[in-house]
Image 1 (spheres, rainbow, N blue to C red):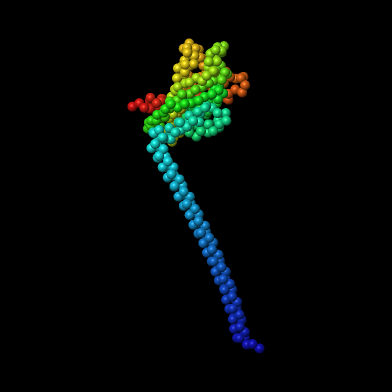
Image 2: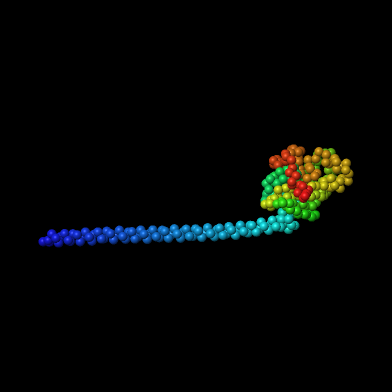
Amino acid sequence: MQRPDAARTAAATAASDSGGAADGAKLARRRLQYKMHQRRHRAKQKQRIETLEREVHELLAEIASAELHSRRLRSVFASRGTRAGAPARVALEYFSVYEHGFSARRWADQERFLQGVMSSAVEGPDYVGVEFIKHQWRLYGRFFASTRYDIQGYDVETVGDMTVVVVDAVVSIRPRRDGVTTLCPSLAGHEELIQAVIGSPIVVPGKYRFIFDAAGAGSWLGADLDFVSALQQTFRSLENVALVMRGANLSFSTGQVRCEAATSSSSGGGGGASPPPAGRRSHTVDHRHHLDFLLAE
């Protein structure tokens, strides 16, 4: 039989062994938890470093793009007052895009061009808004069988942060028959004069003024046309010229079709012109946009 003291000693030893095993298991779990924590920490650090590196690359790319844009702007600003500058190129491109007037096939491209180079609030002698210019060209497509621009020359001036481009050009226009009777209703019943107008183009000399703001957008577009001389060449008579101009739905100084009158006169003619957009001036013209004012000392 085992002695009581020996039994107690054996029990204590067994308990001690059991407690040591438990402590070892706890320590192993803690070590495993620590390793897992370290792995997660390293993974987060790696992900954070990768994110920072990506953001740094993106920022460097944005800086490079901004510097390139800045150089281009400085280049444009430095050359804007020259014949090779961006404003002059845009003005000449306008005459290239509309060299043959409104195009039934390319009208969407033509209007995208206007939208891209003109301010939405571009002004003229008696209109406001790029939509008005678009509508004028649609009316020209309706009332004129052919339109052709020939540039004679151009000048560029800078006034403060604005750039003024003045283009001398000749526009040759040949109206359709319904265009004649709509735009010049006084010719109704004068078949000989109507035939003279639609038989050959009317060659109209003029000056076209573009003003571009500091951002390079077109803020003004206006024409100064010599229709009287052109009509005199066509009719060889001032009396006939006066008859043509009487009650006309066309401005013989700017070439602008008077939308409301022209649309009203042509209604019922099949297909009519689309309603004019809101863009007719109802306020005084800003004389700061006139070339004489801008160049005055």
